[in-house]
Image (cartoon, rainbow, N blue to C red):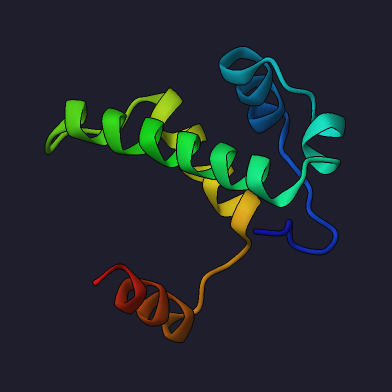
Amino acid sequence: MKLPENVEFTKDEEKFLKSEFGLTVGQVLFMGEDALDKLYSDCAKIEIHEASIAGNGDISERGRIAADTVDTLHGEYDSAEFDAEMAEDD
């Protein structure tokens, strides 16, 4: 994966990257594709884990920020792109 053009992380996402992975935004901006794929996957795993803990309740702040970071790393999804990625997983 490649970062979206003009990617910007929020202060919460910056703190999250530092506390969870020991990474600065500067380091993330210079990561190779494989490292970005792993970071994206690790953030998604945190989001899924926190959502499973929450059940029908509100997801934790950690889970919310992980989800926001996933969106920032990937950029906005459109429905066609989402459908294509889901088809690849089948």
